Image: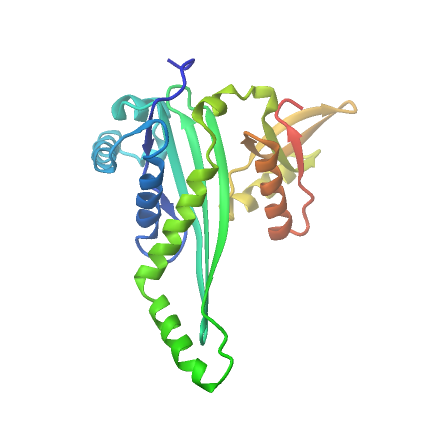
Length: 259
């Protein structure tokens, strides 16, 4: 039941916002390998994909649009893991390479659809030495050439997922969070609903999932553009800083969900 800590977790297919074909599959499989050693059971990826394919054909829609409860019932799991690979970039400078990976993970309670945990992680990996003399160029260049291969990319993904899974709190701790501890990020507030809808549309076009709420302040109704909910204030602050960098004209603030 919803009152018990989830015991079985299903890692659903990850989405891919990058231009690297199949990257979402690689990240998902690596994530699965590390999550499988955590103190709860997981549904096999092959079984998940088979069930999802049947459900999508039956329902006539993508599994992201299917209720978590139905997914949980068919997958016989208590929690669902949604992943989105947002960025993957590689920079090559003669004998130096830099790899950037960014992924967002959301864990939902299957029966209620309640968000248990959400986190976005960005990591950079560096390889390639700076030669101290003419002879140093050759071995350094060779090392960097090898780093271009898929094995180097896969090692970076493996390290990334190991770090990510290590950040996931125990499911029991996630469920112990009270709803009044949840936070949102308020993007902006407007007297006119059209203003809120415009900003919300802009954010949606950049991959965010905003929502609009109404608040009664100073005898007036204000339309707030929000993003959330976040399980911890740290997660909300992380999103706040990201929004400030991407939209310099905005001044997002972190607020408690019930504020």
